[in-house]
Length: 296
Length: 279
Image (tube, rainbow over all chains, first blue to last red):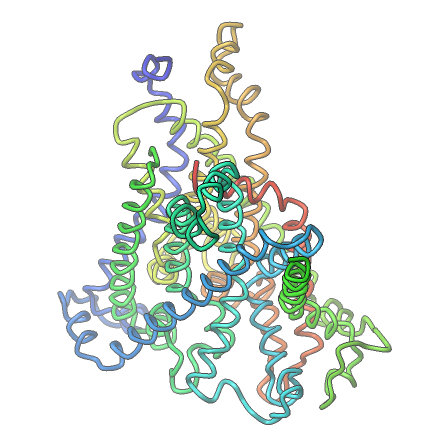
């Protein structure tokens, strides 16, 4: 009632103005510029003013789609993100269930440890794991007796190590969120099910999973979006994309094309492709939210 | 049954130890004397802790300055982004207007945009603006403050919306009946009540700005004095031999503030996340 009464005022416009200015200037306008750059021939020559900027239409895109390198990077991005998401969810969900079944002190220890891992900045997390897995001085190599083994030389061990850091940093979010979700399930419902003769397995699948579905959807999509955009860990641990670019993912590739090769138009085109992929994921996310009954 | 519980307890403690082990190793390496860092037989403890690495980092490499730079950027971002998000959240929860839902969805979508791709146009934008407005161009801390304010806003608005929405309308109405103007309601009634939510939001904004590597790498190209922590840290990686003691000491300095911050607001953080996720 009261909200409807105030509907005619201009107040919300003034309140939204600062946010609109900041986001318009530093978000929407750059988005438009990204699209614009992607249809231009824009390299070092144009940046320095040596040559005029030229409109090339879809050329950046057609060249990109015809480049086997792009498809290779796209494939590794998808596989890397998928592996990270699956591992994060498995570890996070497993530990969330574990948390509900342990005594108070172990539960406190585990959640504090997870919080600590969550808090570590991506840069220092990366450097720490690099030291742990260093060729000669790394504790892990010395423990395994494989001194001299460089994890970064091989494409798959390098991706594996970066993936481990990503999972280490992101499982806490999944664990904490799912644990909160599980705890929110009314005990009386579970007790009633047990009285009706439902076993642990059955009550898990028929009661827990349906109730937790909205939370699960959010956790899954958030993980997909984060892991698809991993930048800092890859950039630092593989020194900007690995040997001969073997560990490039889409956004590192876009960044390198622009800032290392001065192919700004091409980098922007990769950025647009990536934005579209993430937009598709976001739409799925929105539908999941809506189905869970969220009132926007 | 009891045995099963003991076993699970043991597993939980083991996982906790594995999870904190890298952090332990980081701090340990930071206080190990140089000789032990170079050792081919790393021990998981040290007999002679020393602050040499910290001294090297802070005194020789002027790391204190970069720490201060990071801190200034993060605090400005927290304050500005928090204030702007608060105003927007009030508009979105206290009023019904056209495009309200569209705006909300936009804020949600904005969180998904790959910021890494936006660095390309932003680089040119910051370069061009810098020629007109000094202080926000390339190589300035102002440029970092600007972009971080923008990129923390959508999430901050989304999160604060839940907190403002939880305050009953009757409170503002009662204040208005008592003769308080809109402005007074905003500052004297709503703001204090939203303080816990602002604290939770601040943590996220702070961490976002503090942890940033991407923009520091892109914008601060030649002005070494305006670097922030992440880039300053990479100085210790050398082609011939990495100074691991210094790298770990610098990493520790970068991690500690966030870690302390995180553990203090732990409970509030989870509650805030719940608010943002479930509303």
